[in-house]
Amino acid sequence: MDKLGVDLPLLLSQIVNFSLLAILLNMFLYKPILNALQARSERIRESLDNAEKVKQQLARVDADYDAKLQEARREGQTIISQAQERARAQEAELLVVARNNAAKIEEEARNKAEQDRQQMLRGLQGQLASLVTETASNVLGRELQTKGHDELINKSIDQLGRLN
Image 1 (tube, rainbow, N blue to C red):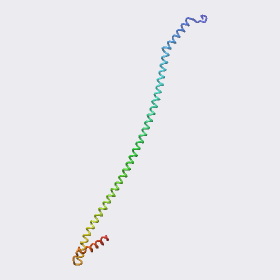
Image 2 (spheres, rainbow, N blue to C red):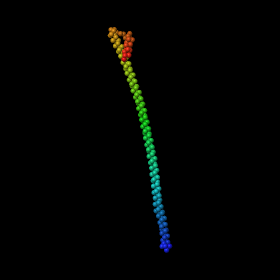
Image 3 (cartoon, one colour):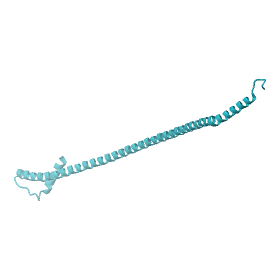
Image 4 (cartoon, rainbow, N blue to C red):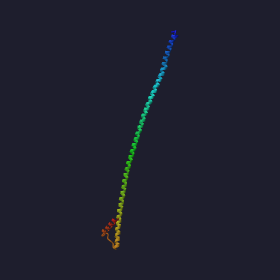
């Protein structure tokens, strides 16, 4: 190999040195860098997985929030509807009570007016009987006796009552 210009012991020492350098570089530099890159890739993948999980949880929470918000709105509408219905019922009930009270007051007023009218008529009848008796006695020149002429007086009062 000398003829080719290759020094065999130098070539063997260079092969051994290169192999040793390759083994040392592989052990101390290539594997740690490769492990660090692999660990970094794993952390990135885990971070992406966690981000996806967080995104899904956020979507579920958002959907739950929207569902609860819709439910709360429905319940609110139901409560408002019930309150309005109760208010309408109370309004109707109060109107019925007010109308009944008004009718009762009107009936009492009519009864009172009728009682006052009857009392006034009785008073007027008594006064009228006295006036008729007095007038008749003045006209006839003698005094009529009320006991004997009660029928005549009552007939006259009845006729006057019918005219009213």
